[in-house]
Length: 449
Image 1 (cartoon, rainbow, N blue to C red):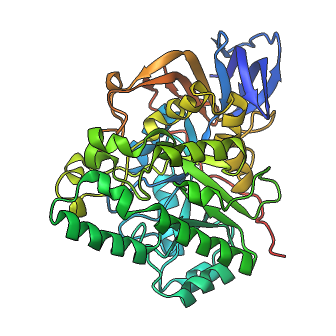
Image 2 (image 1 turned 30 degrees about the vertical axis):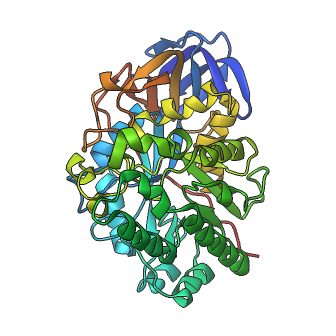
C-alpha cells in the first residue's frame, strides 16, 4: 500500500474546524489541502463530513505488564486503546514488581516493541530507595517520574517528608503526582469500620477517599514544586477544592499542569448504587458538584488535559468486602466517545476537546512530531462519526479483563477509524491486527531556572 487519501473531512486541529483532505504517505501526513486527487496505489477514504482529528495521547494508563498480565497486557490494552481513539499512551509503574529502576524501564520498552497497537512511553516510579535511579535518569529514558504524594499508589510509597522532598529537588524530568493524604484516608477508613463494621457499602468509598484527603495532598505537591522550581503534573484531580488551587490560562508557561480522568467527568457518587464496587477507583468518584467543577475547570483552562487512568482488574477482584476489592477501572476502549459526551453536554467544543486530549499532552510531555495534524508529522489520526452512537453492549470487550463500567450505555459518537504511524489499526468496529505502535520521542526538557 502506498498510503491513504482521506477526503471530505471536517478537520479539527489547532483551534479550528475546516473542510480538508489529508494525504498519508510513508507513515506521515504528506499533504493537507482541498480537492486532492488520489495517486496511484493510494487507498481513498471518503470521510463524508465526519470529524478527523489527531489521536488521543493518554497521559496515564496502567497496562499491567509485567507481572499482572492476568488483568491486562501491553498487547491487549493497546488494542482496546486504539478502538477508543487513543494513538499514544504513557504507562504507569504499577506493575509487579513496580517500575522503579532504569533496567525495568528498558525491559518495558523492549516488551512493547512490535506488540503495541499504539505508540508508547513509560513512567519511572519514585519509591523509598530509588533516589539514585531518579538522579541518573536521562530525560529521554522515561516520559516522567510518577510520585505518590502522601499516599500509597501503584505499589509506591515514600514514607518520609525528607525523601519526598529529595525527589522534587533532584528530578531531571517532569513529576506526575498522585495526590491523596494517607493519614486522612486511614482515619476515614477507621470511622467507616466503626459505622458499618464489616459491611462498608460501595458509596462509602467517596467518604473514605475524601475531597479533603485529595486537597491536602495536592496542596503539598504544589508547595514542593514551587519550592524546588520543578515541572509538576497533577494526575486525576477529582474535587472542586483541588481545581480551586489551579491557575486558569494557556498551558504555555505553566510549571504546574493538571488533568481529569474521563470517569470523574462522567460518573457521580449516585452511580455507586447501580455499579457498586465496579465504580471503585482511586481517587474516588465524588459528588455532582465536584463533576460540575471539573467540567467548568476544563472550560476555564484550569484543567489542561483529559486522560483515562485505565486500570483493569478481573471481575472477581471487584466483588467481596469493601477492603478486599481492587480499585481501578478499564476505560480505554470507549475513551473518545465518553469524552465526546462533554461536547454533547455543551461543556466543550470539538476544538477545545482536541486541545485537551492531543495538543496539550504533546506540548506538556514534549512529545515530538505528534498531537497535531501538520504536514511532516506522524499520521496518528482518528475519524469520528458524531451522527452514530457507540452502543457499549454491542462491542466485544478488548481489554483482558473483559468488562467496562460503561456497560449498558449508549455513548455519543463512534470511532470510525484509527491510524497509528499512518497504518490503519481500527475500522468500523474491527481491529486490523496491525501492531503499529512505536516508542515516543521527546524534545529536550524544560530547564529549571
